[in-house]
Image (cartoon, rainbow, N blue to C red):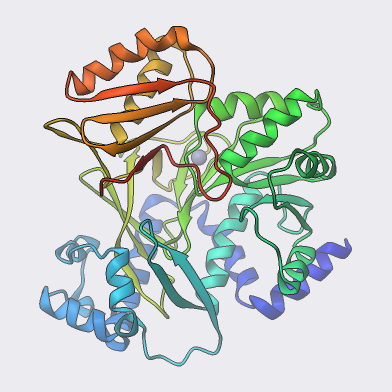
Length: 426
Ligand SMILES: [Zn+2]
């Protein structure tokens, strides 16, 4: 009760437009697809008009491709704009900002894959409406954001006083280092928590400890949410055993906002189409963040390969929001064979086939330092499977790629996200 009060006061101060918008989202949650499309189109048109007026970069961008938001009659018209990537947001940063005077701005920073840092400011409505979409997802699981929760974020970081106060306001406790002592303490606190969120690879590590210490069955969690990383089947097996439920996924990035949230009934993610537009081109997601007025994100190449559900897919929950079936991971990186080049997702298929055809679930990480050669580390110790892996590898790479296998490896370096392919060639 006290936490609810503190939380609501904090929200009114920090995010005044959150609660009204959450009410709206709970209404639109029940809308037909026609209603959703109509709302999305009108919101997009208004957003593009605003951006075309206030942002120097987008004004020129729209003009050079003949895109006229005021005359827009269908979302398809935005397809004339070539997608924008993170590098452009970094290099053209000053021109992308809209010169509108927002009453309140929040500073954000996010790093790119090769180390460049993107900095920008979110206006209050952007931040609040994005949080509201996340809280709608919580409510699908019967959770209020002020309920006690455990959080895995930021390895080996310390929290300043502001962070500690925010944690207190959000009734949240975290784990900072990957020492077994600290994780055991965290697990004890988890017994009184209602939900758990963070990097899925960390949730997996904790589940392993819970199972090893025989602590399963002592938790009352309503939701375990994985963010930022791919959730592997092997994680699910371990987490299910520890906590009696799967990790559900939330998909999005700081600059794109929340893109999709997993449905408790369908097991797939519904697109948050009140706040964003999702397009898929050549298997790759292109996202437009309709909230991003202070620093517009339009037709943004997030770098993930995704699969959408067929148009006639009907989720058993009754929601009409389109569905993302699968996020395959980062696109763009290449595996170099002796002569050929392969997308890094190929390893994902090799190991997925093992699961589909043989029911074998392995955690892996491939490392490439020279063309034609990779080292594949596998967490489990099952060297008898080398032959079966070889069959799958040959299907994709024939004799073009040599590889070594090592078993019983610790894959997580605990200083960032778990990567399934590391290359020094690009
Ligand atoms: Zn659903």
